[in-house]
Length: 87
Image (cartoon, rainbow, N blue to C red; front, side, top):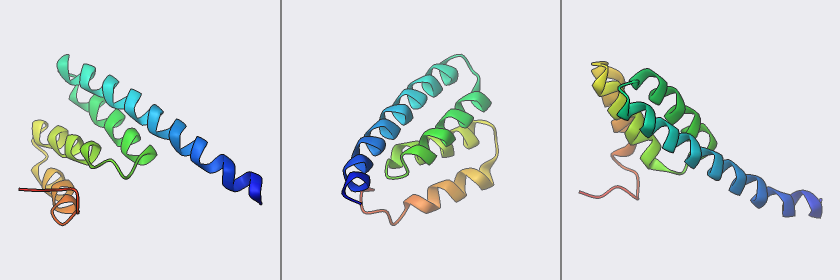
């Protein structure tokens, strides 16, 4: 049991690193105008590091750029009451 508890933070750290790498790739995709590819990568990043609200914001931005306003609003509504969000 102790081994399992000790190994969990390392896994979380690896997932966060992978999420960060995916988000950097997503930004590159956005710069090339490949919004759908960026959306996929941001979604994967968010699944790996659900505590990072920047990924959800970027997902909303991708939806906005593809004119899928309902999904964009839905993503942003999830962030409205988040403690890390300010005016």
